[in-house]
Image 1: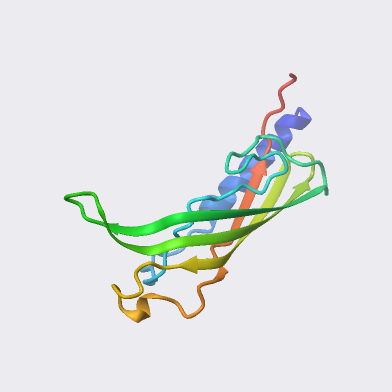
Image 2: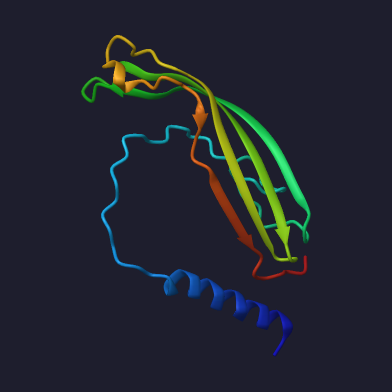
Length: 157
Protein backbone atom coordinates (compact mmCIF):
# COMPACT_ATOMS: atom_id res chain seq x y z
CA UNK A 1 0.00 0.00 0.00
CA UNK A 2 1.24 3.49 -0.80
CA UNK A 3 2.80 5.26 2.21
CA UNK A 4 0.51 8.31 1.94
CA UNK A 5 -2.61 6.17 1.67
CA UNK A 6 -1.48 4.23 4.74
CA UNK A 7 -1.12 7.47 6.73
CA UNK A 8 -4.51 8.66 5.57
CA UNK A 9 -6.15 5.36 6.54
CA UNK A 10 -4.44 5.45 9.96
CA UNK A 11 -5.59 9.05 10.56
CA UNK A 12 -9.24 8.29 9.70
CA UNK A 13 -9.18 5.14 11.82
CA UNK A 14 -7.90 7.14 14.77
CA UNK A 15 -10.39 9.98 14.17
CA UNK A 16 -13.45 7.73 13.97
CA UNK A 17 -12.23 5.62 16.90
CA UNK A 18 -11.97 8.70 19.12
CA UNK A 19 -15.18 10.29 17.81
CA UNK A 20 -17.44 7.25 18.07
CA UNK A 21 -15.62 4.78 20.31
CA UNK A 22 -15.76 6.85 23.47
CA UNK A 23 -19.50 7.47 23.66
CA UNK A 24 -21.17 7.63 27.04
CA UNK A 25 -24.65 8.10 28.39
CA UNK A 26 -26.29 11.50 28.04
CA UNK A 27 -26.39 13.75 31.10
CA UNK A 28 -28.00 17.07 31.85
CA UNK A 29 -25.67 20.04 31.55
CA UNK A 30 -24.98 22.15 34.59
CA UNK A 31 -26.29 25.70 34.52
CA UNK A 32 -23.59 28.34 34.23
CA UNK A 33 -24.52 32.00 34.69
CA UNK A 34 -21.49 33.28 32.77
CA UNK A 35 -21.08 33.61 29.03
CA UNK A 36 -18.36 34.74 26.66
CA UNK A 37 -18.68 38.25 25.25
CA UNK A 38 -15.31 38.35 23.50
CA UNK A 39 -15.97 38.50 19.75
CA UNK A 40 -12.36 38.31 18.57
CA UNK A 41 -10.98 34.75 18.70
CA UNK A 42 -7.55 34.57 17.04
CA UNK A 43 -6.09 31.32 15.72
CA UNK A 44 -2.72 30.14 17.11
CA UNK A 45 -1.04 28.78 13.96
CA UNK A 46 2.18 30.26 12.59
CA UNK A 47 0.60 31.18 9.25
CA UNK A 48 -2.88 31.98 10.57
CA UNK A 49 -3.96 35.58 10.04
CA UNK A 50 -5.93 36.84 13.04
CA UNK A 51 -9.02 34.57 13.08
CA UNK A 52 -8.52 33.01 9.62
CA UNK A 53 -6.76 29.63 9.74
CA UNK A 54 -4.15 28.67 7.17
CA UNK A 55 -3.92 25.09 5.84
CA UNK A 56 -0.13 25.11 6.42
CA UNK A 57 1.28 23.29 9.45
CA UNK A 58 4.59 23.73 11.23
CA UNK A 59 7.43 21.24 10.60
CA UNK A 60 8.12 18.57 13.23
CA UNK A 61 8.80 20.03 16.73
CA UNK A 62 8.98 23.62 15.49
CA UNK A 63 6.96 26.02 17.60
CA UNK A 64 5.41 29.42 17.29
CA UNK A 65 4.34 31.87 19.97
CA UNK A 66 2.46 35.12 19.68
CA UNK A 67 0.68 37.86 21.58
CA UNK A 68 -2.31 39.98 20.53
CA UNK A 69 -4.13 42.73 22.38
CA UNK A 70 -7.67 43.76 21.51
CA UNK A 71 -10.27 46.17 22.82
CA UNK A 72 -14.04 45.85 22.42
CA UNK A 73 -16.28 48.90 22.75
CA UNK A 74 -19.80 48.13 24.05
CA UNK A 75 -19.55 44.33 23.61
CA UNK A 76 -22.70 43.73 25.70
CA UNK A 77 -25.67 46.08 25.83
CA UNK A 78 -29.42 45.88 26.31
CA UNK A 79 -31.49 47.41 23.53
CA UNK A 80 -35.15 48.27 23.13
CA UNK A 81 -36.54 45.90 20.49
CA UNK A 82 -39.11 48.46 19.36
CA UNK A 83 -36.91 51.48 18.81
CA UNK A 84 -33.52 49.78 18.52
CA UNK A 85 -32.05 52.27 20.97
CA UNK A 86 -29.66 51.27 23.71
CA UNK A 87 -31.22 50.98 27.16
CA UNK A 88 -28.02 50.26 29.10
CA UNK A 89 -24.43 49.30 28.33
CA UNK A 90 -23.94 46.23 30.54
CA UNK A 91 -20.26 46.01 29.55
CA UNK A 92 -19.04 49.26 28.04
CA UNK A 93 -15.45 48.21 27.37
CA UNK A 94 -13.20 45.15 27.52
CA UNK A 95 -9.44 44.80 26.95
CA UNK A 96 -8.06 41.32 26.32
CA UNK A 97 -4.53 39.93 25.86
CA UNK A 98 -4.36 36.72 23.79
CA UNK A 99 -1.31 34.48 24.25
CA UNK A 100 -0.88 32.09 21.32
CA UNK A 101 1.23 28.93 21.05
CA UNK A 102 1.46 26.22 18.37
CA UNK A 103 3.67 23.14 17.89
CA UNK A 104 4.26 20.99 14.81
CA UNK A 105 4.00 17.23 15.28
CA UNK A 106 5.31 15.04 12.50
CA UNK A 107 5.19 16.74 9.14
CA UNK A 108 1.40 16.76 8.92
CA UNK A 109 0.00 17.76 12.32
CA UNK A 110 -0.10 20.88 14.45
CA UNK A 111 -1.59 21.59 17.87
CA UNK A 112 -2.23 25.07 19.20
CA UNK A 113 -3.31 26.79 22.38
CA UNK A 114 -4.90 30.21 22.91
CA UNK A 115 -4.96 31.72 26.39
CA UNK A 116 -7.16 34.86 26.49
CA UNK A 117 -6.65 37.06 29.54
CA UNK A 118 -9.19 39.83 30.21
CA UNK A 119 -7.18 42.63 31.81
CA UNK A 120 -9.84 45.36 32.00
CA UNK A 121 -13.61 45.43 31.84
CA UNK A 122 -15.87 48.39 32.56
CA UNK A 123 -19.61 48.79 32.89
CA UNK A 124 -21.96 51.65 32.20
CA UNK A 125 -24.80 49.96 34.08
CA UNK A 126 -23.60 50.17 37.67
CA UNK A 127 -26.78 51.91 38.89
CA UNK A 128 -29.22 50.11 36.58
CA UNK A 129 -28.54 46.48 37.52
CA UNK A 130 -28.15 44.71 40.89
CA UNK A 131 -24.61 44.67 42.35
CA UNK A 132 -24.34 40.86 42.12
CA UNK A 133 -24.44 41.22 38.33
CA UNK A 134 -20.91 42.62 38.40
CA UNK A 135 -17.86 40.58 39.42
CA UNK A 136 -15.54 41.73 42.19
CA UNK A 137 -12.52 41.28 39.90
CA UNK A 138 -13.26 42.49 36.36
CA UNK A 139 -10.24 40.60 34.98
CA UNK A 140 -9.32 36.94 34.61
CA UNK A 141 -8.71 34.07 32.23
CA UNK A 142 -11.38 33.66 29.60
CA UNK A 143 -12.15 30.43 27.68
CA UNK A 144 -8.90 28.60 26.86
CA UNK A 145 -9.00 27.13 23.36
CA UNK A 146 -7.14 24.09 22.03
CA UNK A 147 -6.70 23.86 18.28
CA UNK A 148 -5.59 20.89 16.15
CA UNK A 149 -4.78 20.73 12.43
CA UNK A 150 -3.94 17.85 10.12
CA UNK A 151 -2.71 18.10 6.54
CA UNK A 152 -4.54 15.30 4.76
CA UNK A 153 -3.51 15.92 1.17
CA UNK A 154 -0.38 17.46 -0.28
CA UNK A 155 -0.76 19.32 -3.54
CA UNK A 156 2.24 19.96 -5.76
CA UNK A 157 1.94 23.70 -6.46
